[in-house]
Image (cartoon, rainbow, N blue to C red; front, side, top):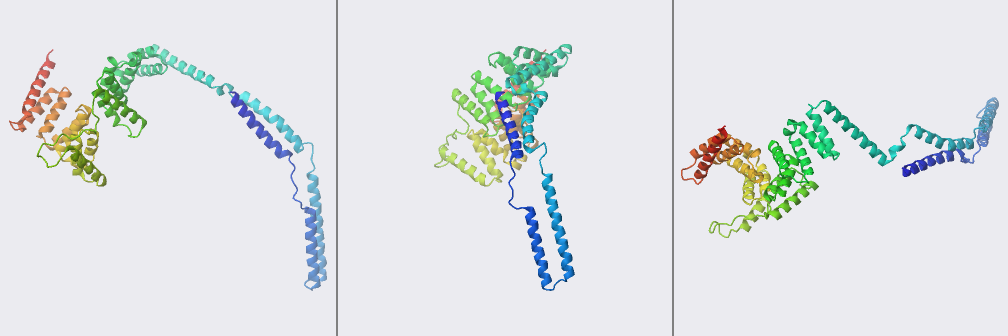
Length: 447
């Protein structure tokens, strides 16, 4: 506050000094007399008129007439000059007296106006913060009073809960969330926010009810940013480092690669991998090449071939089959994020190739540990192109099983069995899955 007063005083004094200086300073003369200048001009004109008379250019009468006009003009100019000197004679309000009046009245006027119209307490930061806090508290208390009179307002209870949470009144925030009822259960944002509140009350522990609420939020919105973050934290706290990495890698894909948030999430992933003894994506080698499969082919050489293919595609991005080959190679190397990026660049091939669609879906499911969402959409697209595609049918059955649609899962798997050779190694696992689905379906039908 003292700093503000000092700056304001200094600025006022500078303005006063500038005005006073402009009024009291003496205006320097230009060294030229207007009266003398007019006389000199008159002499020159008269001399020229005399020369014209001597050369016979004008008559004597014209000479005299013109001479008289010049003399009268000189007289008028001299009289005007004297009049202007008299008009400039200072009266009572001289420049010095005016400057003195301004120097005295301007600061007094400025102080008076500020005290009358200004808000001195507004320049005190602590007073301003206290005033804001009091205003917010008053608004929250008013909302609480309204809800007490009209408790059937879930939106109001949610607003009150969030307000209490920001104010650090956690117990009251929990009570408000409970009174919001089904509105919280149907909204992933509110579920995650409420889960965070419960975790704070529990010493930042997410196990139990908070973790269940986060899982429900992700079921409704698998891409929920805060839900993925907190799900990863919950898994990390439970020492399930693989699941933590899975959630955080999914979150990482939503962020700009060079952002500070992405760097922090990557650090979390690296930490979880280190504690869980997991190998980071992109560092795996290809499995050993079977002896005799290709002379002189080693995993290292195959990796070099993959890198060369990636470099060629960077210069020739319209090679769609090349992107498909690169995606499959990355998938084998367990470089899942790079594989997904390559699959996305296969363009029109995804509209016609069921094998490519199922491989893409399998890569997504491997990374995210679920067939729901985009993997399921890709599988259904593959089945529209090739209704008897064995891999698409098996994956469609698994997706239905995960969603609790056991009858649909059985239908897909039985169709897959009809398309496979009797000696296929996939037959026995599919039959076992069908029996398991039938058992689950019968159990769910019992009262």
